[in-house]
Amino acid sequence: MPVLRRLLVSALLGLSFINSAVSLTPGFPYGSEKVRGVNLGGWLVLEPWITPSMFDKTGNSKIVDEWTFCQLQDHTTALNALQNHWNTWITEDDFADIASAGLNHVRLPIGYWAFDVGPGEPYIKGQLPYLQKAITWASNHNLKLIVDLHGAPGSQNGYDNSGHRIGFPTWHSNQTNIDRTNQIIKTIASMVADSPEVVPIIAPLNEPAGYDGDAVLSATRQYWLDSYGNIRYPYGSAKQSNTVELIHDAFQPLSYWNGFETGSNFQGVAMDTHIYQMFSDSQVAMSNQQHISQACSMGSSLSGFDLWTIVGEWTPASTDCAKYLNGRGVGSRYDGSYSGSSGVGSCTGKTGSASSFSSSYKTFLRQFWEAQVITYEKGEGWIQWTWKVEDADDWSYQAGLKNGWIPQDPTDYKYPNICN
Ligand SMILES: *[C@@H]1O[C@H](CO)[C@@H](O)[C@H](O)[C@H]1NC(C)=O
Image 1 (cartoon, rainbow, N blue to C red):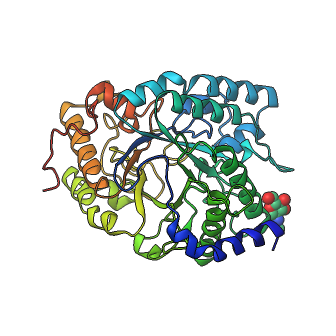
Image 2 (image 1 turned 60 degrees about the vertical axis):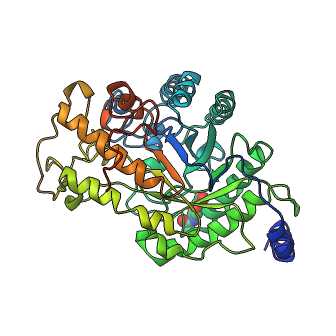
């Protein structure tokens, strides 16, 4: 056990009595006000389905994630494309628009490679100045920013959105990967420790693949405990920050986490759960009413859980029709172009530009959006995935505002009884 870690652990244990008397003052009144926010997806971590044009422009169908984007093009080409994207995809105007849409949080995904590129890793650095800008812009517009580590060394889930699309994740099975990730959380925690009013929460790892079994889950549990120390004790002493740790459920039912990081030794822990209804054949086959009912049925588990529970990703989209959503070159279950799926119907008019959406589809998007918002506010609140998408308006908060299925004031319901 490294000396600093031993020091922190003994501080934690030794101070447990005092801890329960100390009151944490988070930068946002979690527990009394609802989180209402959007993710800034596809900015500092590329996702083929959010910006398909960046991938199509490469002319190379083997480029399927940020890893291959950097690996299979010459360095200057990749760097120029990334810098242009970082400079234009999200600007301060987006923060202004998000604030004027009545939202109070943004969650900002960032990859480990912004901090640490190891030997043999093709990633290109340069994202950190944009994280700094985003923190300034959040402050300028009175928004709370969640720093979300979305990709870890070895990949925690193998999804393209972890930076590296691979068959089986290797983050959890390699202690070097985990050690590097802990180091990054320490760096982030000390960066933001003195500005909890702008960065009240750190999410130390997005979506570890808990469904892969016990090895992932036990690595994840230990990592949440270590991250608690790193986030809540960033000063190398017994002095605590006011920064909250946002752990993810690792795709387990909330009940799996009952009692985890609760009690007087723990303060300032929140749970992130992600709710999607399009990543299986049976989900895409559901009727509009079934989608709404399923959303409404989540209320009691969210309100009954013992940590502040935020639905940190969700969407009014109900199909997997968006181009590259399942990966570049992979089709969709909804229209049967995904290998092994039988298909439900045509994707035409379900995604792409809102100008192709029927008025009844837009009414459904509004109803499904409201059903989810109403339900997720039975917990601690919600953060929609995502603010902006190139060519999938069903997923875009910005497009929802513009086309009317998302209200300018997120408490202005048209269907307040949708879940009754
Ligand atoms: C573990 O991961 C590190 C990178 O974080 C890598 O250099 C090393 O080769 C990996 N070890 C094994 C056994 O795969």
